[in-house]
Image (cartoon, rainbow, N blue to C red):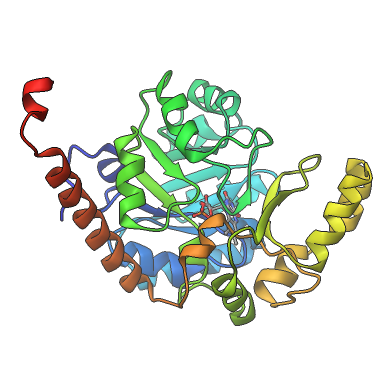
Length: 327
Ligand SMILES: Cc1cc2nc3c(=O)[nH]c(=O)nc-3n(C[C@H](O)[C@H](O)[C@H](O)COP(=O)(O)O)c2cc1C
């Protein structure tokens, strides 16, 4: 199945399939991003867990590993934005996905250098801000997603049509999407592409620790929760650390106390070092749909096959006598 050039997300980024691998701290280095770009999607380097010199190294290695477009995810809350922007411009990275912060600050600057900018939002308020900042595309990330999220708990199923009510920008759906049929569903609601995190976080090319990947693959329904709403809401796999956070929150802990509990380096401890007890294990609800480690190419083959099958199956369902006459 080919996406035609009338798919605006694919043409905006110069990719074959409108499938974006979300930037992910401690998972998405050059190995994952280049594999995704080579498979026909858009790979994003996760600058949120990289010092500037490390990011530059990953950009260089990514360029060596693929001649296809790739981008950088810049979580404005954590990374050193000015340094990241300097590297992006010096290294001529063509695409930046900003998240967790104000899109107003850097969008125009990046665009003035020819960089395409997408911004990740989890609610209408931030979507409106991104629209007025003039971004080239929006990523609408629902409540199911791994990593940071909105306090409103708006699901992907609701967020996509909600944003479509006021924005005609190219729209990328994220949160809970791990299969081709889910991709088709998101596109039926008005999205023109998908951003996938969880499934790529446990791919062979992800730099996450094997113990983290296995815990995700072994997880069951209800094993993730959205926590730290008073600080920065984040969906985590439940473990002793998340349990301690939950109890503190139930006892009315204020943001200062929660910040102290979180400390520094929790995501690294959990995702990269595989500390399943005390690490922060960011992952989405879609974890329950996954049960073994796959290469990026296997994931793409399955997504495209699933998308195609789901579309055919729908066409068959709707192709019954009477439907055409009734509408
Ligand atoms: C381990 C992990 C780390 C993440 N880190 C980031 C990040 O650094 N920046 C960001 O914008 N989003 C981050 N996300 C969110 C993803 O980019 C993506 O939007 C999300 O995972 C999509 O939902 P899904 O997990 O249901 O596929 C992270 C997600 C996961 C699972």
